[in-house]
Amino acid sequence: MVLRIGNASGFYGDRFDAMKEMLTGGPLDVLTGDYLAELTMLILGRDRLKDPRYGYAKTFLRQLEEGLGLAQERGVRIVANAGGLNPAGLADAVRELSVRVGVPVRVGWVEGDALPLPEGALTANAYTGGSGIAECLRGGADVVVTGRVTDAALVTGPAAWHYGWGPEDLDQLAGAVVAGHVLECGTQATGGNYSFFAGHDVRRPGFPLAEVHADGSCVITKHPGTGGVVDVGTVTAQLLYETGGARYAGPDVTARLDTVRLEADGRDRVRISGVRGEAPPPELKAGVTRIGGWRNEVVFVLTGLDIEAKAALVRAQVEDAFGKAGPRDVRWDLVRTDRADAGSEECASALLRLVVRDADPEAVGRVVSGAAIELALGSYPGFHVTAPPGKGAPYGVFEAVGVERGRVVQTAVLPDGERVLVPSEVVRTRGLEVVAEPVLPEPLSWSAGGGATRRAPLGSVAGARSGDKGGDVNVGVWVRGDAEWRWLVHELTVERFRELLPEVAGLVVVRHVLPNLRALNFVVEGLLGEGVASQARFDPQGKGVGEWLRGRWVDVPVAFAGAGVG
Image (tube, rainbow, N blue to C red; front, side, top):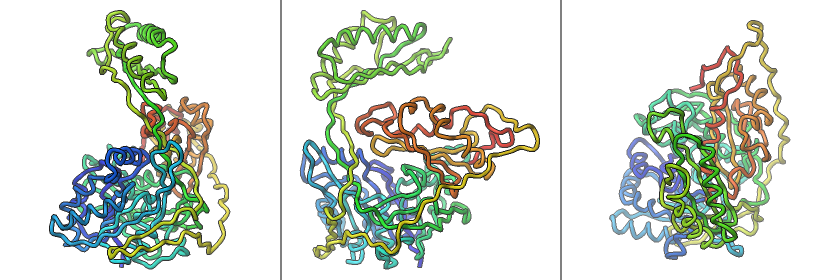
């Protein structure tokens, strides 16, 4: 029997009613929730400093107040990584909630991801797999909460439990990893954050679910009557999100993204098949967060004429006021949002953004606010700021490191209190296959029109989605047709990518080619500085980089310019 796994959360703070919607919208066997991200671990770490009883996603408990009864009525197991830094504490809280609402449930939890804290670190956690979840479900758990498992483990664990897969079932596990990766960000798989949103009603997209089969293949869909859309484009976009090359390595298995095949399977249904798996790597990824220092920001509004001169004046005044006591790191960005002969003051204004960082809170506090505000009557004409500068705030840093698998002992704590140690060794049923260089299709050649092109946005032909991995950003770009693919793979080289996005000119850019998906995946190293928590740029997670790329103009063959791929 097919296993129906749904998702009700893509991040800590996602749509609150999603759990109820998924439990009442149609049949499910397992409902998952992904609450953790790099930034979330830092937030939970600060919560735990204030009160050691916490360190978990508190909104999950509020969702369960109604969700427990609904899940029990429908026979749905709930699996979530909302335990964060304190899965045992969350398990206790779920049991207390169960008594309070009168819905008896059996609760299991998975721990062991926490690592010894390096000097100065706030959190340190290994990304573990789904085996502990599977053990809890075998032990009869109705609700399983975990710490820092991988996002895909929320699917591999239930699938391995349901079908009896072992660590040697690499292809099946790889298929489940791909399904989990599509589900993990919730409505990004059903039309949310989608390049071609204009072709669909995505005002309130439903959350996705996967019908997982015994061979690891699956169908991605959503409950009938919910908003949004599931098609090959939305699934492709999510597959490319926060990935890199052909090998997508995780603690359960290494999934080969170059083997993934997608096909429409009816309305709002996309079948994923053909996924090959290899042994997982000998090391686990671990995330370390720490307080990186103190940060402050001031945004000056420059209106009307002489924008560049006004920016130069206030910059010189502020830096002069800083003197030797100024912050260690000072960054200025002039954003030309102004228009000539504007019909409103706002449209006539540009923004000059000052961001400062320092290890000393005093260096970003009164020194900065005083330098900015004391200029109010003695600087450029029309001087004002978007908000009064404050005393500064701490910012975080995320670092990804490798840790030997043997140093991480995952433990499943069953509903009856039994503690089951989960083996960490890698099972190799076959060696790593050679990832051959993709065979590129021949460039387009036109028998008529002399290969005529016209200037158009890249996004008139291609979709894109981008996201963060620590300080790096990945940009996945895809097209739907074979002709468009023959053009894209030769047009969008690394050199062309750098030309179109000048911000990446001095950074390492790696291009990965995925012909089965008609997609290119670019990884830009260091664009986001020390990660989202450090807020090194105005788009700290790189969410808009793909849309920036789509907005750039290129020479597009007339045969399909403007056709779109919605």
